Image (cartoon, rainbow, N blue to C red; front, side):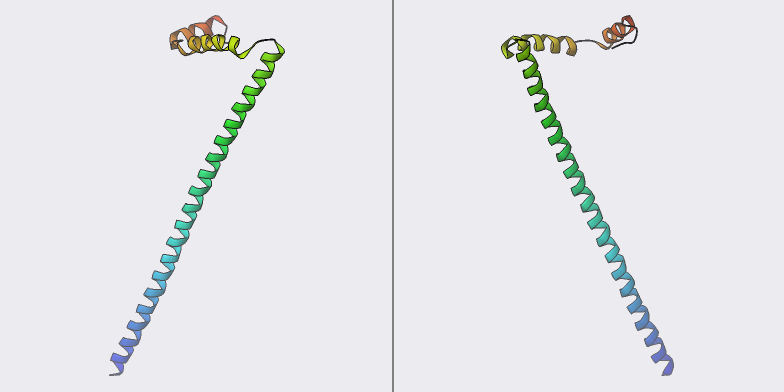
Length: 109
């Protein structure tokens, strides 16, 4: 009977230790999930911040170009066709043309 009591005590101790180990594992999983959620949130915030900074910089560039145009006596209506023409020329340059132009310029952009 003493052996049964001893076995029962060992069994209960092992079960208790297993529950403690399981609790520790669950706590670690919870910490990891929280860490991952924080990383994801920080990434989203950083992305939004960078996007906002880019939009602000684009607006500042627009204002700066408008000021420069005004100083030179150009109206936005006069600049639009020039800008469109430049964009068309830049967008329709083939890689071969770009390489040839770069070679002719001596590697200077």
